[in-house]
Length: 167
Image (cartoon, rainbow, N blue to C red; front, side, top):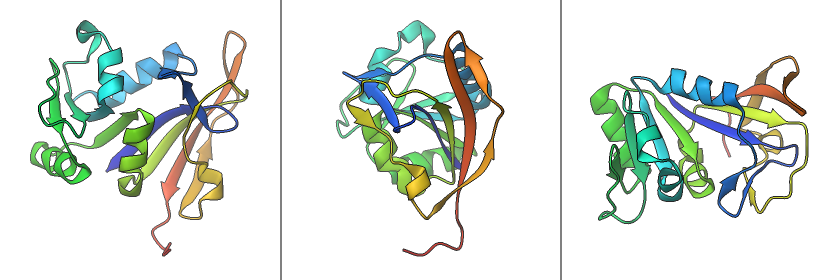
């Protein structure tokens, strides 16, 4: 299975100037838990934004980049979705795509499920995730009760790709 994990505001904004809109500690704990022993995929900029000491070592970290010479301590480099899928299959791992925007867009056609921390607020952003509610191939199958982190109100949403959808 290939999962996307994203935090988005009510307009599907995900970041500004290369930074996430917010960090919710429960999200970080969840990502660490579900990616343990699995394959986590991120773009070069996302990888570079994580201190090496915090790059989770109990999983396979893959950086998706067009630069095959890129090196990242604690991570492998792949240059295409097909290479990532092949590597995860060798390891018999699920794939969790963690961002950034270019990586999400490149991997979107391969996602089976997308887990969204949906924040009920509109941030000042310059980067967006596709609006899954307007995409007929995606179905919202689950939404949590209201969650809060200080004054941030959010919902955990799970979207599945429709198996019967044909563009």
